[in-house]
Length: 281
Image 1 (tube, rainbow, N blue to C red):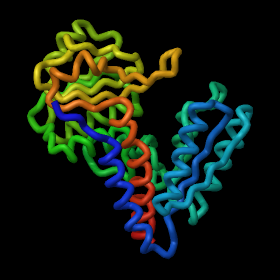
Image 2: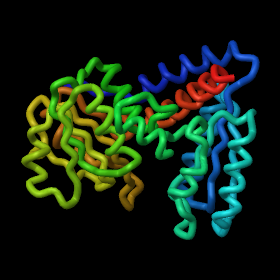
Image 3: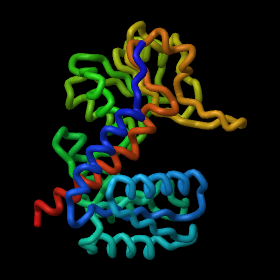
């Protein structure tokens, strides 16, 4: 069993970005919008802000009261769309329920959509052509597979979860690498049986320790995207690591696996959008 080390891989990405930005007169810039006072969102935004500064990317955090109107938020996004000093725009999700998340995402220019959630970018990923940016978590998964020379071609990849943020774009990315992809979810019959046929098993459900050894084929690659805390504050993934690890050929830990890659991919996407915009000009 080989542990897939997301922290070390992320550091390589950060180091590469820092080397590139050091030689730039005008630095790439990301604007992050946060609405309301969700503690988890605030922690995540602060981590993004701190890491951006470390790697030579300018970061602007824009905070709004949770009662902001749809029109006010869309107006701010339009302002950032038209600001040439901003290369990347991120709206921290989830948004308060009175706001239409899909309309907000659609307002961001595809060429500034650092999360890769805009329908244009999502559509390009779905049909297997290069988007301006791809969603950070699935991009992180693909980067880890590449780093550890795990070739998906011809392999059966099973994804448990069907979110627009992780599972669907990841399925498209794996298909583009010639994997045979099955998506499972809460309504799937015979979930254990299907999961146990996977050469590459990706779990993104948000249910702590859901996947035990009977879900896993001997020698499978297991990628755990989930992260949650129990009442004692202990962090868990979706995979029962102690129960599963010895059965795998490769496995990601939680923490220190996929989660470590997400901010790395965000910074990589910011630099990518900066380069694309400069190239177009």
